[in-house]
Image (tube, rainbow, N blue to C red):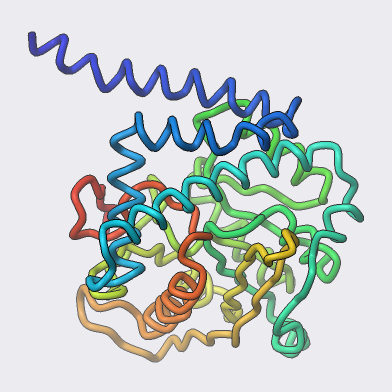
Length: 313
């Protein structure tokens, strides 16, 4: 009985990978068809996946606040899943797009002057973003300004999705750097920053194998990666928060915030987040509250919520 019980999560995981693999194949080959059936598929996934419902509802409760009704939380949870689905289709649709076509999907870059002022100092830049909007379209816009862009990421368990994403980034001329490479990754990224190049990191989720720092966040506690702060201390580069969001037109807006300088002389107590990480968390808070349905996280993100797995501190 115990063996049968223990085998059920593995079976569900295997089935999930199987269907996701099929889904991403369709994303690549028939993205138009998936757009048509989007409401049906999202409805089925929300109804049949307890983990998706639990994660999106938990995050919706935090983003909307305690005063939000169950109906409002459910509506946000469903919109989040629909937007996640849309971005997956978007990667497949972009498979045959030229770099110029991807750049043409940028409607507006808000705060470009802040970015140019920071880059004029020629100290490299650590761009921290979140799982929002179209990441690859944002990279296309960034490559328009930067000859060398390095993206830190972890390989996806779904081979088809990972292949599509890597092919698209290769066409953009973006350098992929995986956390799977171990500690040598950080030396490579530090050298890139010292050479006045740009490193892009997702700042809203701790990847397996990364160290996370618990930070007060919208009435709870969220683990955020400390790697942007450590890289800034090692290189002297500023952190520039940049977010990609979908505009009502369907195009992409890039929102560039004020650079964050990380001081090496700022001491913190044990377990206390670095002031620069707290500042970065505050920027992220405002972004998620302004565009809650565009945050593409389906798992619980707050420590206090059931099902949240904690990163190492």
